[in-house]
Length: 222
Image 1 (tube, helix red, strand yellow):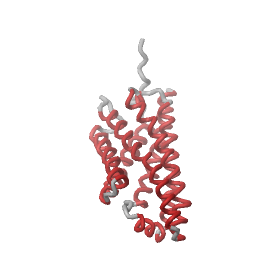
Image 2: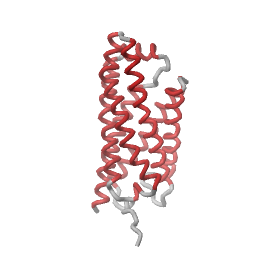
Image 3: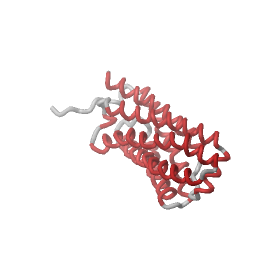
Image 4: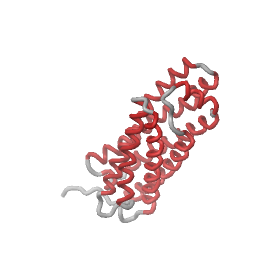
């Protein structure tokens, strides 16, 4: 019973984190590969940008909590080498990106509003580097969703889990195209697929809070 209860706690925080991240992604929007354009966008919409990133900080913190709780649940949610690793990547990647959220809500926003391009570029490079953590969270969620989809009794319907696998891979790909290679449409792909991925993690989290028979203890060899 304790394992099921622990999984429910993790599911609750995962659902709340996912709802917050959906709101963040809608407010955030795609990132321009042109730093001057991005700086202008932040300066003209500084309040929205600031609020979005403080919400992101809260959501990413809860992703970390959810990952840690589920890792300690000793249930089939974190069985096997790849799935256990994926759940471990979730809090690490979330904490990496949490640094980005705080930096962008403070010094990046202030630099954009004040027109200090040199300071903006320096802190943007820092924030962008730390934000790579979210790309790896997306890959981790793809692995977690794939594990759920292959189960005889999945937590969410198999079609939804497989959709989340595609969304997680697309989120990583979109981030790589947009931020690593400067291809503008990649950022659009990142936002859209990340929202879809977060919708699944919200569903998965809510389902965990209601599940009593699909979250079993990890089998212990006799």
